[in-house]
Image (cartoon, rainbow, N blue to C red):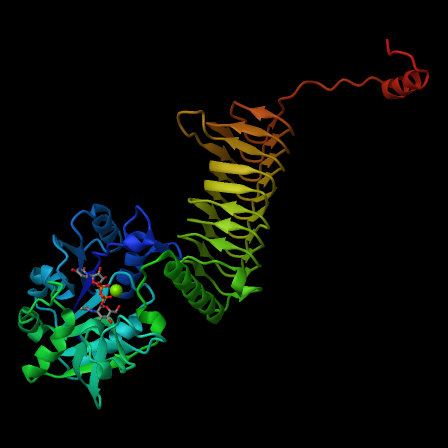
Length: 447
Ligand code: UD1
Ligand code: MG
């Protein structure tokens, strides 16, 4: 927004009792990100103030995690939305041009909608409110309008029969021009019969001060707040649909979009193909041309250009695959750098490791990284060949170009270009099986 400064005040003192959970409402996740995290992300790089309830240290911690520069205010007593906003008075006094008030449980709010609210302020409104038309308006404040001006907001409980017939409801999100915000907010003096101070009274007060108030209409999903696990699930579905559309628009091929589950921060390059039934946890980046095959689960992982992952692969946090890497079925990778062109195609665990460029990890190879007390690293050199069913007991180093014979348990470093073999010599008894069968067919015992 051209040159105007902004303060976003996020009301995050949600009780969340209807979630039937020990966790504060704002910390429940949608697309791998907390409700509060979504709202803070939607506010972009504006200044932020977060209002939390009295015993919500973990909500404050989440606010600082997502927006380290945000100011956190504690509303000691729940005395209404206007009271909550005034808890952040010190932040308002810093004098931003635009002040946004957002509820922390509306994760579907879009940055462009907040920009639209600010646009109304730039055009001279002192108060701008988001309106929507819910299928069932019961419980919502009604927006009383005249032309494009907003006259007042009447809470459902206080509304007359005629006012209740108004379809346009208060979405809860409001924007205030900084220069008049405090004057308006401080006039919300009349606690209602629930002994709460209503932010919605700001509209009438602004008009009494000869200031302009407007309503902007949005679709219901943007403003629908979450109170129950069912609403959380419905919001997840809407969010997933948005993320799938964003991926398709960016040139990602989703063979069966409705089966793919994204995190809010999933980053996919062009010509990435995602096969059916893939789950992305938080923190995944996939570069151009890579293919993620069916039933793979990725979190905190980076997949390089043209790499192939899955089917049935698991990439855990710290997995970093360079260009052209192949990670196949039933292979788990954690905290490991797999350099360009290396392959681990079947049934392996690679954790706390480096696999050098072009190395081949045979089926069933395990890096034994944990000794019951601490984690240790495995380092596999460029072009090394690890035979199937080998156990590499960390800390251990396999040199460039070295071979490890199948079925070996490697506990000592292997020099470059060497062969390491750790298994008992094979015994062969010629004709033994035939003799056994002959003895059995004679009904006699073997000697
Ligand atoms: C509010 C609006 C209503 C609107 C509806 C949309 C008011 C008075 N009413 O009603 O017009 O249609 O949202 O969903 O604003 N909060 C605090 N401290 C408080 C009270 C509330 O932080 O003391 C926070 C809550 O955590 C929540 C938000 O403010 O995030 C809204 O409060 P809530 O009680 O849900 O208001 P509604 O009755 O839904
Ligand atoms: Mg509510």
